Each structure stands twice: as structure tokens, then as C-alpha cells.
Length: 174
Image (tube, rainbow, N blue to C red; front, side, top):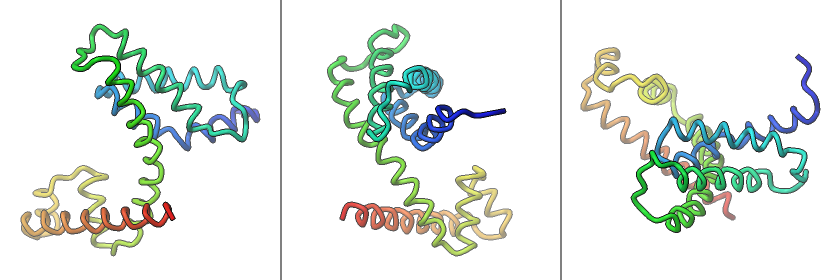
């Protein structure tokens, strides 16, 4: 398959913010199926209008504007969604969620760097628990350690990762 320059540019930019867009949409609609549909619709609109995107400007902001418009339209028009709050609240929430979603990429990068700093045993424990979704009780049986010890160890590792991420992000603010 031959990929043209436009496709290459678009997919390179889109892939760099895919997680942020999904995070933003999910924060707004709280429904995975709806969020996936809205992400697909957002990507389609972005692709169809990519010729209008001005290279050198903020692609993330452009994409977030499209996602915000689609999401607010969904919240306003979808009768199946039980709205707990007024539309104005969702509009304000959108701005907070957008900023949080933009920070998502930075947080993921910080997490990946912090995971690299763990020793091999801790990396394996975190991978089993969170990547492979193995229960702590099953891990305990597998490694021959009490579950209570593993709960404590995982909690300690998570605290270390959280501290490492916070330090990493605060350095980026300088």
C-alpha cells in the first residue's frame, strides 16, 4: 500500500494525540461505546478537513476543538443520555477536561520513563497486575508470596511511580 504525504502527516499527528482525544471524550460522556463512536466521528471530520489545518499551528488544539464540538453536540442531542446537569455545566467541564486530556501525553511519557527506573521484579509485578490484569491473589499463588505482602508492595510501587511522575512533570514546568 502506498501512503501519500497527506496521509502520512495526518496519521503521524493523529497517532500522537489519539489517547488524549479518547481521554477527553471519555471524561465528557462516561460511556465507552459512545466515546469510541465520537472518537471515530472526530477522526473522520479531522481527515475530511485536514486540508484546512494550517501546518505549523497547534494540531492538538485544532483536534480538541473538533472533539469538543462533537461531544457537546452528542450531549445536547442524544436523548438516550440521561443528563444530570445543564448544558452550560458540560460546556465549562469541557474546558477542564480538554486541559486534562492535553496533559495525558505528558503523563504517559513520564509514566513510561518512571517504569524504566523500577527494578526487574517490580516491573514484572506491575506488568502482571496492570498490563496482564492478573489478580493479586493469582500473582501470590504464582510467586509463592502472601497476597497481603503483594498488596503492600504494589501500593508502595504505585506511590513511587506517582512521586516520580509528579517530579518529572514539575521539571517540565520549569
